[in-house]
Length: 450
Image (cartoon, rainbow, N blue to C red; front, side, top):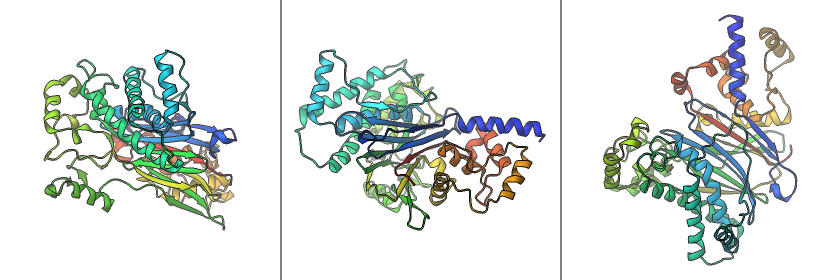
């Protein structure tokens, strides 16, 4: 390659790495709930990108700050819908009934409704305007049912948060399923078509932080890892999630226990019915609906089937005792202590390429302003000369998520970034890139000063 080609590739790679980065410092005070700020970035592999991320502050009730990463499969439709809607369901699930009653009165009287969330969106956020009427109708039905069937309780805050997260996950997935069953022909080509959303799927890892207490609700194989600074200054990586796939013995036993007569077919090649890697996910109704219902869809909705991935156009094999796929999130509670400095929330595209301890070390070193061990001034000067002043030092990224992506793709095996390797990984064509990596979405939540 010529120097000019190297330079062009470097500029293109730099644009790719930074295209979706975003950072925000939250104002100090009760409204931030102990969150100092966050950095995020997303690097696509698929076209279109199947990952999504969301962040928002809850404005009503007990409040809190929400973060989520959503890893889509068989298209981005489900991940997009869940990233736009799940936080509203969590807010409604957590609100006291008296607040919901005020909300319902405002809607009935066509008065301005107090916002439930303050979204922390950046200009590159993907949004599709269609489907908002349907989603609001479903959300309103949810709070109306809460008003009709529940009584105000005095649950402890922690129990209320756990219940709200679990109920919100279940209810949104239920609504996605119902909306798909009553959708109409002609919607199939739209990314927001309810049936298209329900036929695709996504995992979800959501963090709720309120007054120094952190809850993680996980569904699938994205992860939340806590960065803890020990007394001697070293870093520990604490897992706050478990993967819901065949690598988790408890998940294997759960699936086999739920389908005892299908020991030979329910999990094949480490996949659900030989097809799906995560054992818990939103959408993916072809692992949840009855065989009769799926058959009717395949017979009557060619408009949708023509618009979705070929992988979902037929009934899964050995489809005997649905549902096979769970939407039960696994909840972890953690009280944030002084040594808990940050939380890394990321889709499996990161964790497939980098061990959690390495991730935490890179973030910790960046926050403390340290270069990677073994990087001397001589090394930096050599690199600077080699790249004619364009070399990027270990600390040049202001956005820590971008810094992680750089190291994930460009690691030279010794803790440093090899510019040529990084440029090659970023310049791979789409059909080839997917063989080397998945979409990568990272949010780093800053909890305590270092």
